[in-house]
Amino acid sequence: MARISAKVDQIKPSATITVSALAMELRAQGKDIISLGAGEPDFDTPAHVREAAIAAIHGGKTRYTQVDGTPELKAAIAHKFREQNNLKFSPSQIIASNGAKQSLYNLMVAVLNNGDEVIVPAPYWVSYPDMVKLADAEPVILAATPENDYKITARELQNTINENTRMVILNSPSNPTGKVYSGEEYRRLGEVLLEHPKVFIACDDIYEHIYWGDSPYQTLLNACPELSERTAVINGVSKAYAMTGWRLGYLAGPEDLVRAMRKVQGQSTSCPSSISQAAAVAALTGPQDCIEEMRQSFEQRYRYIREALNGIDGVECPECDGAFYAFPSFQGFIDRIDSLRDDVELASWLLTDAGVATVPGTAFGAPGHLRLSFASSMEQLEEAISRIRKALVEAG
Image (cartoon, rainbow, N blue to C red; front, side, top):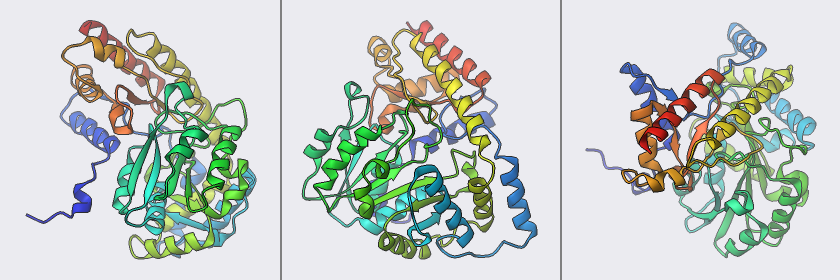
C-alpha cells in the first residue's frame, strides 16, 4: 500500500463533490434521485460562447498558451473589472487558472507559510479550510451568527486577528448562505484590516452576478480601495455563464503576488485549456443579457424554495440576496426525532428515504443545517420539496 502524506491525511474529501458522486452512482443503479447537492447551473452555456470555442478548435488554437492566460483573455478580464466593478487592473496583475478554485489554491500556496493562520468565516465554502491546510497553514474558524445575518462584524474580526494571522477570506455572495456584504459592512471590515498591514485579503466573488439585493453589488475594494496592495479578487465564468465544466477562473491582485502564483501554476497545471480561454473571452466580451435571464430564474426559484421550506414544521430558511443555495436550519426537526442525531444523519436519511440529495451543514461549519442548491429546474425543485415535506411529516 502506498504511503500517504501527513498533509493529505489531515484533509477531508469535498462534501459537495462526494454528495454529487453518490447521487450519480445511485441514479446509475436505477434509483430515482433528485440532486440538490451540486452548485452547477442547469442552463446550457450561451450559444455565442460555444460557437467561439468551436471556432477556436477549427482555427487551430489547440496548443499551449502563456501560463497565466492569453493576452486576449487577460485584456477581457481587465475590461470586465473596469466596466463592471470600477476596478483597474493591468494584465500583469491578472492570472487565469483552471477554475476559481485553482486560483484560490495557488494564492494560498504563494502566500502562506507553516504556522500562518487564515481566518475563515463560517458558514464557509467546504474547500476553504482544507485548502489552507494543504498550504501548510491553519484555518481559524470565525463563526458568524444568525443575529448578525451570518456575516462577521468588524469587532469579531478585530478580536480574532493575532500575530499569526496572515490572511482572511471574504466570500460574497456567500456559499452556502447567499448572504451579501454591503458597501458599509465592507468599509467597517476594511477599517479593521487597515490596522493590520500583514494580513492579506482574499475576496471570493464567484457568485457576483447571481445577486438580487436592493443596492448595487460591491466588492471589498470598492468600499476600501486603500487595501488594493494586499487584496486579491477571485472570480470566474463558471456560475455567471453556466460554464462549470469549462474550468476557467481568474484572479486579480498585486503584481508580485501574481508573479509568484505564475510560478506555482507553471510547475503544476501550466496554462488553462486554450479552448476554454477562447470561450471565456467570448463570455466576457460578448452579449451579457444571458446573465440577467439566468439571474431572474435563480431569483424566482429562491422565492419559491424559501417559502416552501418555511412552510414545513421544524424548518427555518432565512432570506438571502444571492448565489443559488438555500441554507435552512432543520434543527427543530432533528431535535424531535430520536433516530436522528445530526444534520449528517438527516442528509443520509433524506437521500435513502426521500430520494433527495442535499449537503449537511456540518461540512460548511454550521451543524443543524442543510444546503439545498436551487440551480435546478422549477419542476425538479417542486418535486424535491414535495418529497422532503412528505418524509418529514411521516417521520413526525
